[in-house]
Length: 210
Image (tube, rainbow, N blue to C red; front, side):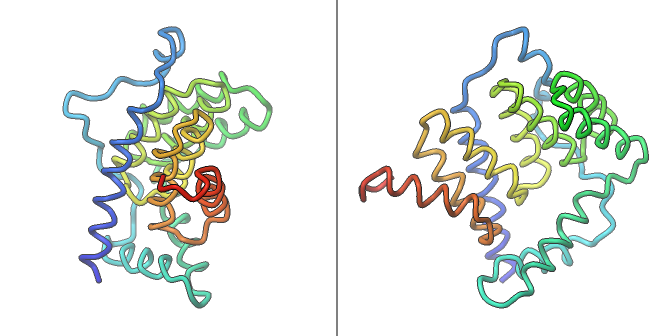
């Protein structure tokens, strides 16, 4: 069973790296807000983790179950574990970033969240939050790059895959969007948004393989 979930991790990471380059890159004035990839394009080690990897694998195995109610508790436990930055500064910057987004200040949010990613580059939610800010500001290239970074840190980060799928669908990249939705559902099959995305794209294809 562990081997099966390891295979899913690899497939999800492969989808992420294949899908992201399909997105257009923003102009220089906007793209410079996203940190450039490192020379090796590898992610820093996750930060703030207290749970052993084996226990996380067990939670993902429970999450993938389509019967019973245990998946809901597993989902909550995974999200709680991901939220642990291990840094009071990181927590404050994330809070300020989301407060700015709630106020409609996407540029201010990007400023706070850029400081967060620099302070804690291994904290996946920081990159995910900045990706959301870029997306809301119309900067799809930097948003896609930040989502790729999230998936390099944690290939099973299903919110990032679903966000990628949404962006690709908006751009009319239906085949890539469908792959991203399905990859996200392979990790967490309990996502209404992703299920609706798959159904919508399959209907749009009028029964032809997408």
